[in-house]
Structure formats: C-alpha cells, structure tokens
Image (cartoon, rainbow, N blue to C red; front, top):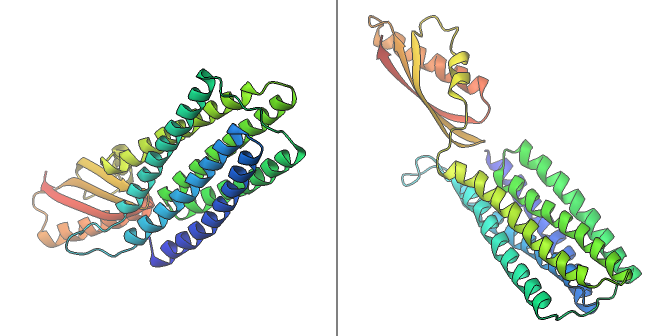
Length: 288
C-alpha cells in the first residue's frame, strides 16, 4: 500500500471520527434526558465507533512505516492489530451494556422513558448518517484493501442494527410496554458482541498465517510454462494487500543456473500478475 493510500485512510478516519462523535453525543444526551436505556446504550456504542477510529489512526500511522532491519516484512500487520483492538473494544462495550440491562431487568429498575417526536427525529438523522458511513467506508476499504476500514465499517454497521432496535423500543414505549426498552438494550449488546467475533475471526487469520490463495490456483497459473516440470510446497500468508508466496519448482536437472534464475523471475512476474495483492514471491528451484 502506497503512502498516498495510507494518507487517504487517515483522512477518511478523521472525517468518520467526527461524524461518530456527533452521533454518539446526540444519542447519549437525548437518551439521558428521556431516560431511554436503549438510546443511551446505542450512544455508547457509537462512542466506541469513535474510539476505534482513534485506534485505527494509530495503527495506520505505524503500518505506513517502510521496512527496516527489525521489520524486514514491513509494518502492515499493525493495521491488522488495530482491527483486532476494535473487536476487544466491542466485547468490553457489549459486556458492560448487557450486565447493566440484566441488572435493571432483575431488580426491576425500570424507568419509563419518554418517546417523543424529537426522539424519533434524533434516531432518524443518526441512522442516515451511519448508513452513509458504512457504505462509503466499506467501499473505500475494498478499494484500498484495508482490513481496518472493512472492520470499522462492520463496527458501524452494528450501530445501524442497534439504532433500528432503539426505534422499535421507542415504539413499544408509545404502546405502553417500557420493558421492551431494556430488552432492546440487551439485544444491542449481543449484536455488538457478534460483530466483535466476526472481526476477531478475520484478523486472527492474518496473524496466524492462514492461507490466502488456494495452492491449486497457483498451480494452474503456472501450468502452461513448459520449463516447469512440477510445482509443490506452495505456501501463502499475509493480508489481502500484502501477500507472501513461497513455492518449490522442479526443472530439468541439466538446466543452467542462469536459465533457472530467469525462469524464477518469469514465475514471480506471472504470480504477481495473476493474483492481486502479492508483494513477495520466493521461488525454490529443484532438479526433477
């Protein structure tokens, strides 16, 4: 990922951070005024969106650094670590909201919230903002191969689901069923935890060197090279924008060193052309 792309991600995160904080303040303040547990919980969730943006800015700042002696493969996995930090933050928020909601339900600490017209207006505006943020951030995440932007968009996506639950709880209050407000808070917490599990699963694959490209696809990509007798021990790892490929190639045992080197160069070029995101190819030549 070029420095220009890292700059694009930083600018995007700053803009989204300001939007998330604005949404969070609106929900938390009005949720507190109207005693709406679900709206306040949704505001806390939006606040965690802002916190994840700060984590992302730090992670992207480190990931943008060039390779050095201590990090010969670069620093790009720091972006993945930042994505994992989002999952941890989501788990903490989910646990806090769930425990508070359960406590209120068990001890019957139910304060009937106010479901005013302004409540629906606040939720409607913040919901539209979140929908725009999710669509734009997911689009840019895919364009820039940024797992953090994709994870962060999923984080904000859970906020949309939470906001829908808040609207449902406000309607239930108008119908005389205030307990639904607390139950909605519990469902929001579970949704947040579910999103965290998904992010943790995807980031752990990068950090544990899960195979990125199917070895059979690489075999097929090299099948028309007449000097390649066989291809085995194919290994791939890394992020979608920083894939490392190792493979062993068998050739005619009488092939010269120079020709073997040229063949390895052709193989490396072929793999880079066929598979987007490949940044390093290590070819080991063996006699057939």
